[in-house]
Image (cartoon, rainbow, N blue to C red; front, top):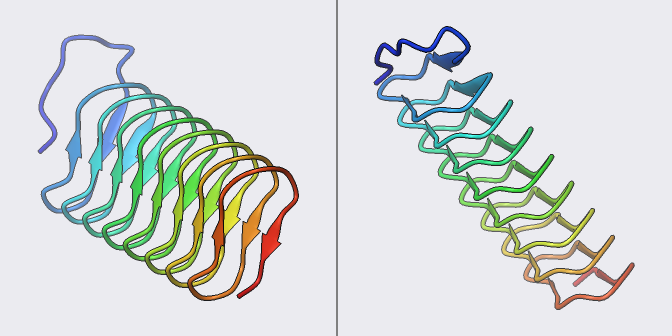
Length: 136
């Protein structure tokens, strides 16, 4: 539900049915039952998707979550990015816990952290480090 606010600088857009915007700037909650908690230029477009905060994050998959950070994307259904910079959880049930430029690209894959790591095969796991690829 999008309420009124007396601050003329606050820009909110809640177009999804039962969407919630708690604050921030230029945030969009367009998915049904989606939530954006705050931050700047965040988008929750999947049904039940959540972006807690941060800057320029996208939760596109159904029931996907981005907790914060900058330029993170949770595209797969039930996917999650906990934080960091430019991380991608693309597969269903995939997760990236943090770090920079990490990708969990297949179903039920995880990258725990590090930089430029890819979990690319179903069920693949990368614990951290740099430029590691687990292709399953």
